[in-house]
Length: 266
Image (cartoon, rainbow, N blue to C red):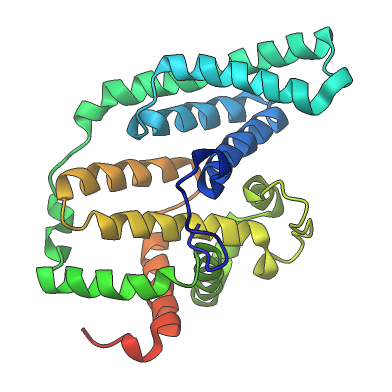
């Protein structure tokens, strides 16, 4: 996370705060799948999309088997005597169900990758930034990063709802709960969307995506497929094209608030 209070030392992989964060995403995904076990109409598309995303992570099908073994060992350590044969058998079946769907999602993504454009689409040619603009974006983004993604995410969703108040209906409480971290120090109260740790987490994903785009501004052959796939995922989120315009305005307002006098005309 871009957080001022998180250590930068990643020399020891066994004490890595980044890996702790990364594997907690798997734990959160399992949690969402557990909640959805009784509703295959929702859990199957979710797991299929999640598997498809791994096309960019260097993952192959054998890694799911390894992760399954590690997950079972972790459950045994956590549950101890509660990890009975019955519980072990149930988890083995559940993980096999989840991983099989994710692997199918990865297979489809590999098959479809050839269809993803690598060249800048005609609809975006008018908005290609100049080299000077790219440099200005990169310089100012360093200041944004210094605040941390959660802080920037909170500023961003506040501006989004000011510009389009009805957009808050895209994030009902049951949706927000999916984006909560399972953390003992995170509040459980999601009754007020304007003070939602889940929305802070959700909008921080947009901030991270912008960060990846900033890094890739000079390599459109990688940036275009990444953004194309990211846009495609939103088909299931109730998003329409007008929401991107609103988010763009909110993002500009957030940048103006964060950068202040550094938010020049350039």
